[in-house]
Structure formats: structure tokens, C-alpha cells
Image 1 (tube, rainbow, N blue to C red):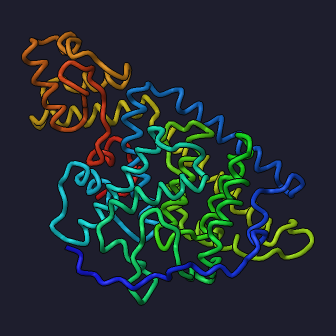
Image 2: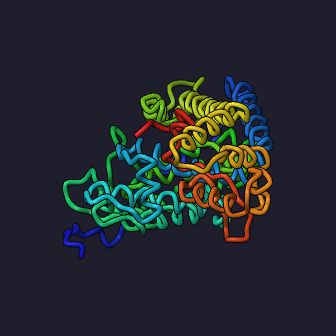
Amino acid sequence: MNSIKHAAEPAIPVDRGESIAMMEPLVISEGAPRRGELIDLALELVARSASFRSRLPTPIALALSDLVRAMNCYYSNLIEGHNTHPVEIENALKGNYSHDAKKRNLQLEAKAHIAVQKWIDGGGLDGPANSRAAICEIHRRFCSELPPELLIDPDSHEKFSVEPGQLRKRDVKVGNLIPISPGAIPRFLERFETAYGNLGKMETILSAAAAHHRLAWIHPFLDGNGRVCRLMSHATLLETIDTGALWSVSRGLARRVNDYKTLLANCDLPRRNALDGRGNLSEEELIAFTRFFLEVCIDQVKFMEELMNPKDLQIRVTVWAKEQTAAKELAPHSDKILEALLYRGELQRGEVQGILHTSERSAQRAVTTLVKRGVIVSDSSRAPLRLAFPASLAARWLPELFPGK
């Protein structure tokens, strides 16, 4: 039972009548300096992401996307100061929770984050990711699964409870920024949705960073805004670039977290002079954050390309399998099964016997052991075998994907 006593929220949120022009410019203007450079970066991102995805067999891509969800969750929560290692996240997904209440709560938080991203990756969003409905639904799904202790606004002296999917009803302060009044949020979200929901594909990619900042600037929820912003950005890139959920911008943002937070905060600054755009906020700073955001995305695609290089990946996986076989943890020649899965993507169960040149019973034993180790999976006893990328083996199979435990 939740024994936490919550402070009462205002019955009617105060609207101080702020003009929606306060958050202009929402997009980088046609005549902005270095716009051409940003377009080049966006084009490079589209090309690299498409090339990377096209080279992966579909079963391998599906297995990788499962691990990338855990990675994205880990880094996004790490930006908020919540450190839950992907191995602990993987345990939570299996229903194995820590006896430590704080760690267990963070595992539940991670599980909720992954559930939302899986819903997004599966096409759950009904409409653009930058619509008010989508933003509120992302927040609702995430917060609805959190334990009560994580639904308390951490920045208030009073215990205000975060309402899943509900816009905040009181004023807040975020660093040096005091966001708009709570009653004004619906008006600003309406403008936000209009501005970002009617762009073409290239302009949406180019404006992904701007939308990321402007949603954080509006600060629509009492808490959870950072996670919602990053999930919205993930969904936007998934929609426009068709990333396949095979790489994560959150990893890049977390690895350069000081730059991320500084450049994001700089976008709050007012327009400096006549050369700094035509809006209330600085276009120069918005351009700087956009460049950073696109470069981080490109860097993450490059990283995943190198990590999934077929020859190197095969060596890492088969060396591990041979070591496990020598230690009597796997059946003889199990590396041949994994090697075939890496090359072909999936195997029928009946093909294993031929690969191993052994009896049917020995082939079944080899498969069963690999399944127990979590490195191959199947939807049923008759369905094809597929490779899996368990977080517990990421340090060996996919080094530097996230820190070792």
C-alpha cells in the first residue's frame, strides 16, 4: 500500500497569457547560416542508417533491436541519474528483481521504459510522434507502470504526485528556466503539433532536435519530460528514417551528456541581435544543438555498423562458443550453429543435425543448451531458430555497447 501523502494540486491551472510566439523559431529558417551543412548531415544520416539496416538479415535485426531497447533505456535513464545496468534490466524482464527496494524500483522503471519503446517500435503510435496525443500517451504508458516512490516530483519540497499522461497543473523551475504557466501548456502544445506535424520528411529530420528542445522547454509534465523527449525523438527518427530501432540516439547523448545538457540549455537563450533569426529564442543556439544532435545520430550509426561487422562479430561469437565448449558448458561444435545463424539469420531445427554431423538426439541437446544460455530463441517448438543477443554476453559479443557490469 502506498503510504506517501501527496500535496494537493490547483483545481484550475493558472494561465498567465504567455504568447505562443515565445518559443519561436520552431524550425530553422530557410535563410539561416549553415542550414546547408545541416541538410548534408541529415542526408548522410538517412543514407547511413538505410545502408546499415539493409545489410542485416531480418532475424538478426530483430534480435539486435531487442538489445538496443535495453541499451536505449539504460542510457536515457542514466542521463536522469538512474543507473540500472542492462543485465539488471534483462533480469527484470524475466521477473527477477533485486531484494534492494531502490534497485527494484529502478528495474521497474527500466521495464516500463522498454515496454513503451517496444510499443512504439511495433507501430503503436496512432499518428505523428510529435502530436499532443502521442506525447501524452507516451508519458501515460511510462508512468503508469512506475512504483509510487518514482511518481513524486523530485524537485519539490512538497510531495506532488506525477499523474500519468496528465499535463502539469502548477509552476516548476528547471535549472535557470521557469517554464510557461501550466494553464498555457495546451495552447503551446497545439502550436507545437501544428509546427512539427505538417513538415516533409527531410524537414522533420532537420527539425527533430528543435522539437526535442521545444518540448523540454514547454515542460508539459511534472516529471518524466526528459524520457518523453527522447522517446519522442526515437519515434520521430523511426518514422522518418525507418531506423529499424537498430541504433540509439540516447547512447550518444549520454556519452556526451555535458555537451547535451549545455547545448540544450543554450537553446533557452533569447535572440541576441538582428542576425540571430527572427524569433524570440536564439536561432544560432538552435542551429548548434541541431548540428550536435545530427552528428551524435551519425556517430551512433557508425558505431553500430562497426560493431555488427559480420567478420568481426562472427569471430567474437564463435570464440566465445569454443571457450564454452572447452569448459563443457556447451555441446561440441555449438559454434557451428551460431555461425550458421549469423550467416543465414535463422535455421529450421531439422537442419542442425546436418550442420553438426551428429545424431538427432545430440543435435537436440546442443540446441537445448544454447536456448538455456539465452543465445538462441524460437517462437515455438516447431518454429525456426534465431540468434539472440543477451545483455549478459554483450561485453563479449558487442563490446562497448554499454559498460561492463
